[in-house]
Image (tube, rainbow, N blue to C red; front, side):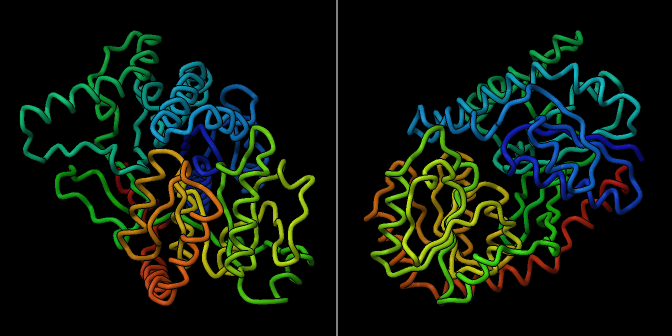
Length: 398
């Protein structure tokens, strides 16, 4: 089959589709993945055919600017969503052209490609990362729930209706109306999240999608650091550590908290802050290192609870201190807490040396229990074969 899929956003919004693309290619399918031009190298280095969609911008830099203007998690997420939705709307012609000639469009969690595939009469399957977005059609509804659900549904449908108007299609009442009723793939483990009994049958949890980066070789400096002492704390805030400007005060909080707790640490991100910043000998900046390797080296990880980082922490069996920055990350943080692999989430707006130190102490106090739970979850996840299951379901659906 010739298959195309499109996604916008940070690396965490792109990586699951790289994994899926590679799995489909291994099964003999021809796959095109479209995204921001800034992700060309990432996608092509993975051996996936890339097509540029939308403006040539650094999406993580743009997200940092938006995030810096609001300390409220809900407002920050809404502003980011509006920014991405505008790019999606302005990219519809690119997506439409890229859809032509394909046998299947895999519609990403942002619903990119759904309308264009409908116009071209190409079958679709969906991918959903946030289970809160799945309509619970089989759940008994009160009048008030219907009223609230209808309002939220209309708000969510607005950006997609703008795209539908371009092609003369009728407006939809909610985003669920454009989700494929053939198949909706949810790349989350059943050992982490229980499937809702109110979902329709085509919403299927496959298990996480991931690959180990077996070709990665760490720098000699990083290898020497890791061998020179106890396992370090990993600070990996993902796209949330991309700075609009140097944030040395924020970096200071973590460094001082690590010193106070007597922890060694490996720090990802904070490129601008680290340019003129001297780290203690007990800490090292590591730059871009795959989590499949890095998380195996750490004692526990402090992270922002993006979808990919949350999954990686459980796939590789490392306990977490969650620091969610925006609304969807709070949901992923609670998943970690619910399966007992994380301490109480620390809100980004509450960050200080003392709150970080306290979270580290909470982790130290319950470390053996959290570590045991993380190892058990990882063993179960490794039995699921999420990518193979996703490919099987896609082929079966068609």
